[in-house]
Image (cartoon, rainbow, N blue to C red; front, side, top):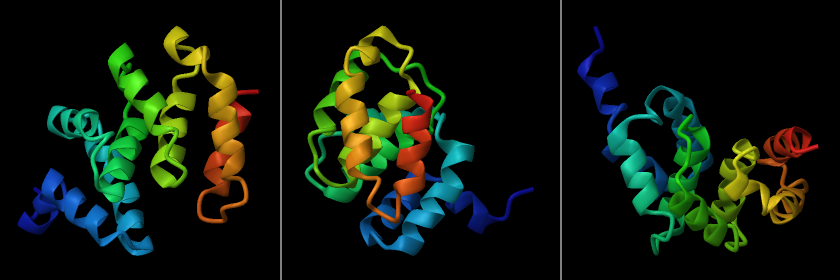
Amino acid sequence: MESPENDQELKLDFLLSLATQNTTEAWQKIDEKLPSICDRTDILNWAKENTQNEDDSFRDLAATILESSALDLEVNDILKLKALMSDKSYPGFRAACALAKRFKNPAVSSSLDEIKKKLQDFLVDEDVSEIAQKYLDLLK
């Protein structure tokens, strides 16, 4: 049985508090917790509704959740992620990753050149270069 502390770590509020901290350690914790909760309805609904959030950390978290999810994205979600790709920082990168993961979807495949370009832009970022390369390899 999960302890109360672990239960807290599986809640959306916990992810939001980590994203607000916006530290390397906080994002590592997010990356660690997401696989077990990213397909939950409450988490996915929040992500779908926050790709255009004013807060950079929340846009990043929204795209990261959608990247981690196994969800087949709806056209509206894909359009939101395509718009988010124009963000020059991590939210745009994570949006490109979420789309690259679903490259076989016809609504995504029409934007493969832009997705590849965004991923290539992050090959020089030591924090995410391996992730960028992984998705570029997937798109070959």
